[in-house]
Amino acid sequence: MSEDTASSARPDRIVTAAVLLIGNEILSGRTKDANLGYIAQRCTELGIRLIEARVVADDEAAIVEAVNALRARVNYLFTTGGIGPTHDDITADCIAKAVGRPLIEHPEARALLDAHYGDKINPARLRMARTPEGAALIENPVSTAPGFRIENVHVLAGIPTIMQAMFESLAPGLVGGAPLLSRALEVDLPESVIAGVLTDAQAAFAETLDIGSYPFARGGGFGVSVVLRSTDGDTLQRGLDTVANGLRGLGGTVEERV
Amino acid sequence: MSEDTASSARPDRIVTAAVLLIGNEILSGRTKDANLGYIAQRCTELGIRLIEARVVADDEAAIVEAVNALRARVNYLFTTGGIGPTHDDITADCIAKAVGRPLIEHPEARALLDAHYGDKINPARLRMARTPEGAALIENPVSTAPGFRIENVHVLAGIPTIMQAMFESLAPGLVGGAPLLSRALEVDLPESVIAGVLTDAQAAFAETLDIGSYPFARGGGFGVSVVLRSTDGDTLQRGLDTVANGLRGLGGTVEERV
Image (tube, rainbow over all chains, first blue to last red; front, side):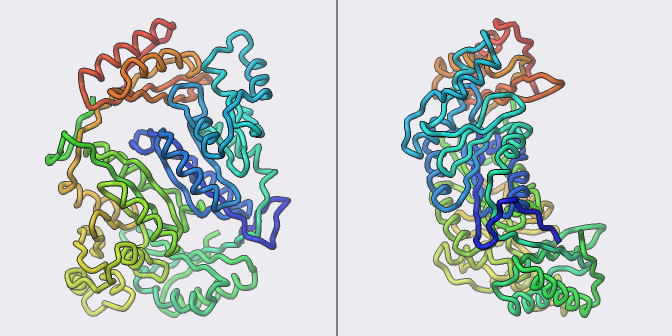
């Protein structure tokens, strides 16, 4: 059972998040995204449910539309990409437009960049000090130029090492909700044989338990990972027993995957 | 220069696509998506521009909303996931709802499954014969149960090997548009030094050329991949020369990346 929640977790409520990946390079297939999986895993650990992710191009209209659609429906929106010094880095401009605030040179960000670059500061580097008015900075321990937060929108870098460092500097302040506990079984039977057992178990536990079925191919045969999730540990245990007994009744070899 | 287009390409127009990844497991971080990168790369090769991707949970309202938002704005929508035999495979139901057609047992799909499973056919396996009325099947050479196409929505499996085989069975029939040619340079200078050169080049070529700047960390330093894209080979060559000369003028070592 994994249970890793923020110290400030609020177990009485559901806390949600969305991710917006910004960048032509992901949509052209040139770059394989590495950021969604990281944020997804960390949110789960923090008791935050990621409910949607989108990838859009470096295009103002597309970014503004996605930011406004997503920020309205979650507690936390995380964006990655488009906050560097070049002409195609337009995320700060777009976030300002989306939240209806002027884009300013953030004094603290300017001070950080001045201290870092000294007399090598230049107009491109100063682009990285721009935020919507009222933004709070997100620390970048890797390469100085900060991310920022405005309302519930958290604007992170696209380079994975920097994105991860920024996320971790935010993490202690993120308030998780009811942690979703999970356990997983693996069985050496195909989905189409075990479907009835899963359907019956899902019906028996209804909304208190979520049963996911994830087939895999291995060594010429098919098997299934069955993932059970609940906010209640006892329910999870009973669901696990029900499913495991059902699968063994079909002649399957069942192992819990830790 | 890469130029790999469908035999039936229509170089006089822009052809667009979107991807919808369906599945709780991606949003929980349990599974790292491997499908977006594959479809993105193949679309680029086929002269199809991927303009947006979304990831949603196994939730009817979320799937229907995303299908309808995306299919209205692109030539091709590709979905992955949720077409297996278990209770959490609800993609066919959701697509039928989105396009406003009844969900039926597709006679050809039923015949394929009957031939494959023989007397081991069961209700779970028969779920995989369900499509919206009027759908055309997409061949699954790996495990028989087909995908389907209805209007401009192409419904593929979530398991990467099966998804890829389904995509390739579709590919000869996808009509690409003006192929986007691309060339890439690498330079051993940071983005904040080369930004001015890129901004000037982008301004000089305006809409005829797209210049992307993708920083990377390597061996303790930062460098940049500059990717130039155009539908016109001569423009691309002139753009490449302009940027390469500018970067060399800054003292950078510039190499074309093939």
